[in-house]
Length: 231
Image 1 (cartoon, rainbow, N blue to C red):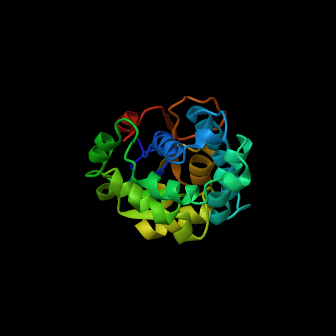
Image 2 (image 1 turned 45 degrees about the vertical axis):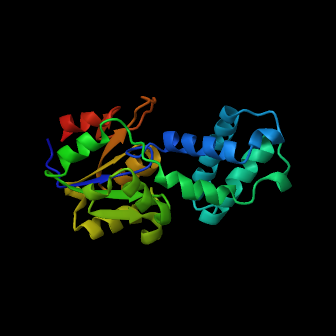
């Protein structure tokens, strides 16, 4: 087994349970704004349409085709107008409220704390995230993840997004690490796994839904507890 010294984790969808936390936040906003009065859609329909649109916009953002502000301003307008709400009836502050509420949610994937507590004395732990700098540190604090990590590298501080090799090079420099002694753990096959591979870094593909793929990865797991077997 290769000896690693530095472990780089993705945050959203890998440690911090974005879908569960977003679901709770969207249900709160649905009730606060009485969105049902604008149409016949249920809260579950609202969440489903939002999720689809948000994922599509994030792909554009990660491809440098839209800005952070465009992503934030468009997702609720597109969601609610698709559900039949007139654009002028879309609550003006709903996007800001979502961004304010979401990072204070604390749900993490099973075994997150147990595994990080196991790894912390053995390795130097860091984060590489495409998430927005202004909310990632709040997420870490809200879910009690802050103490585990030395370096938190965001796309904003590095000037580029995963899978760009430059963000991985920046993270290695910040951590004082080499690619050969490092391992990247993440859920996104393109951004985390192939991005790290192209930067010369071994990878762990976190695939809890066991999605079929044809890419060669260094390691693949469906539960974070399996990291103990690898490390």
